[in-house]
Each structure stands twice: as structure tokens, then as C-alpha cells.
Image (tube, rainbow, N blue to C red; front, side):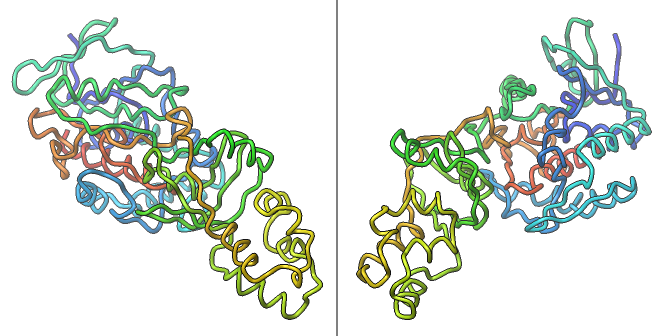
Length: 393
């Protein structure tokens, strides 16, 4: 029966980081994955450019039932540590809005870097593997079974990810394994995901597909100032994806399509200075014409400012700056970038990522109840949690 010191289930971002980290400690590491190739989700992150971390990183950028859990890992292997690794491999990168770091080239460079480090650390891989059983054999050994036979290991690391993007291999395997060993799960749902619309709103807004503007999207708990993107199916863009992680079904959201601007004051000033200007010409300087037409009726748009009452100008401002809409739902795991919920962190050591109840069993990355904001936070959690587990597995 083949033996390894460490078996890592999952060749995604967290699994690869854990494997190379453990391999550097001279541990005999074997990575198993049901996919044909490693890093499938990693390759599509950041539109293929891999938003691999963020300059401005804090525990407040993560959602978890235990908001303090992520602090230890993020401080012990920080964004600066991963940036140093990227620089060591001479991978060119650049900063975008809000501290987000992307490869100048593509995500393949990051994957190749990780695989190269795994090779140097002596990590072995098996792909297209279907695990049929996992058992604890005594106090310090696990047995992993599949069509190949049986493997034994001292430490077992679950890096199977969440439920987001099933088309590229997401499965609930990690959750089932956690339950098998008595760990609790937090309810899961799609995060960083576009909203779908009620039928009437979809009919009204679908002609706006392709339009993107800066906005402030908010509910009672959070607000985000980033772009909103109108799609054929509903609402997307960074502001919407961020807010979706804090949204509950049936809840109304409020969107300001002109953040940082006092539109009513602007319209009043325009009316006083050039009363014969049409409302549409003033608004067209601020927003796309198609967008304006979807929110303001044609009679008002064709009217001069002089002909529009102050109370109606206020209504116009509210329509564009306090747009209230109740999403029909979300697009679900199919397009979600992350899974909210997962393995309850209260049962996991924040220092080692090891189960408190099952010695030698570790959980890293998205399978845990830790979900980050859009902007490189989830990959950094993968790097940090994987590295920490690799120091002890």
C-alpha cells in the first residue's frame, strides 16, 4: 500500500500552496484531484489575468460566522509574502483600482509558478482520480481509497473548494468529508454573484444590456461604490457582486447612479442659469442616453427646465440617486465567484487549519466558512490558509 506523509485533496490555489509549503519541509506530499489538470478555477480568475491579491487587505474584507478566524493566517502569510514570490519568479503585474493586483500576462503564469515550486519541493500529483472512501486508521493515519487501490497518509488536507462554478469541477465532496468526521457546516449560498430581476424590471432594463456606470449600491448592512453592469439577465458589475454577498432573498437594495453628486442642486442651478435647456441635454452630460430614457419619462426629458417644477426635479433626482429595486434572486453557483458558508471555523485551529476533533485532518481555502470580497481577497485566503496548513501537515 502506497504511503505519503501528506495527501492533499484538491489541486486548486489553496491545495497547491499547501502542497509546496509542506514539501519544502521535506514531507512526502501527494496531491489528488478529480480534474484532468490543476488550477482550473485559478486560470479563469480576474478575467484570465488572475487578480492574485490586494495591497489593502484586512479581516474586515471577509465574511465568516467567526470574523476573527482569518486574522492569524492572513498575518502569518500576508499579501506581501505572496507578492515577494511573484517577484522572485519575475512575473510582471500591475495595480488596478482599490489595490487589486493582476498579472500583465495571464493566470497561467501564477499556476506555472506554483507548479514549479511544487516540483522543486518534490510534490507528486494524480489527476482524474475519483475517491471512493476516506477512513481514519488509528490515531495518526488516514486511508484514502479509489479505483487505484488504497493510499495511506499521516496528514490529510481537504482543499476541495466550494460550490461556485460547477462547470469547471466544483463539487460538495469537501463538505461531505467534513460531516463524515463530525465537523459542523454553516449553510452555503452563492456569493459575489449577479442579481436576476423580477419580470417587470427585466423587461424594462434588459435593453440596457452592456451599459456600465459608477454607482453606489447599498442595503441596510453594506454599501459599495464601484461599477454596475446591466446585462440581459439582470444586474452585475463589481458593486452588485460585492453587495450580493450581504443580500438576503426578498430584500430591497438602493442604487445611486450618480454617487458623489448632488443632482438636485445641479438641476436647480441649471434651471436658474439656462432655463430653456431641455432636461435630457443636462442629464446626457452625466449618464448614457439609453439609461436616462429607462428611468425618466419622455415628456420630462423633452421639457425645458423652466417648464419642470421644483418638486418634479426632486423626483427626477430621486429616481436616479435613490433607485430602489428588489432583485428576483441571484444567478446562483453557476456564475458565483465564491461560496459563502462551509466548514464551521469554530472546529478548526486558526493557527494550523487542523480539525480540533480529528488530529491530522486539515481544511483550507474556500471549503471553509471564509469568503472574501471581490478584488484578490479570496485568492489571498487560499494562499494564506494553504501555507499555514503546510507548516504543520
